[in-house]
Length: 337
Image (cartoon, rainbow, N blue to C red; front, side, top):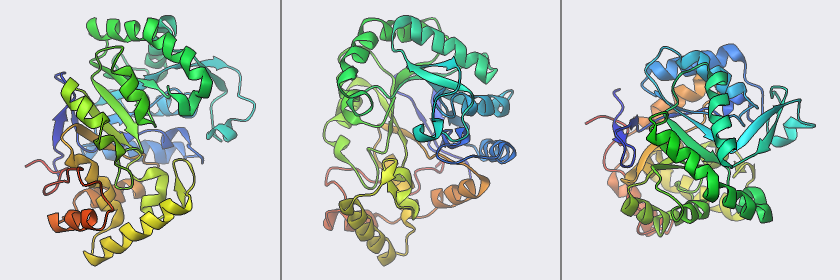
């Protein structure tokens, strides 16, 4: 299968419509064997998933180290993130932060000019690479920071954005944006700079489409692309019981049950529908599920080739399971036509 590609925003950078989310390679919620991690990413690159996303926060450096060792010398498009610096010394309880197999560092938030520049240079060294294509500002927003977000947003607006813009202007990166789990902060930052792409995790999925009302039209008008992370909403759309990194509430469980019933009517796999849905919107450039082993990669590749008829998407809208304004895929969105 040859993956289709889409251009990111106003840049000349193109990415495959199916990419590789590197959080699991940092040991998100569970340890990942280093050999299995390497084989999984290597096979993903061979399959055409050469857009790889990582971050310093993922395993406190472990994901970046693993990703860099595999993509080095390969044809890749790489994104990593800024906004947290890693300081020597293990965190008191990294498992409580989601990383039971973290390296002996602890993260410190820093969205300032100097913090962004230092984070970029640190990532190059951890990766062992001379090129990073996309820099995302990681986890800024009230859901992460609460009342403290005001000071972090000020740091980004008054200095951090300037650092990102300088790195882009100098050609050190090709695109800049946010990597977040909330749509509102993406709307907020549109007012402080010229962005290329937002990596939005879990908020434009088969389960949730609120951004189709405001964020996606705003991004389309500004020439900003969306990369969809977490297309399975933390596992609830692939048979798990977690949503948004926690236990799924009753209303989510009820909607998933209704989606599953609709899929059975059409003999469609729920994960296949979840994986393909976001690419119905032309602002979405790529979908990047987090993959921790070769079985998950194999399943994902199979779901990407599933043929889903237009009648299925119409049925979901008729049942009130999809936003009426949400565009839906035509044919196979992952396959090059």
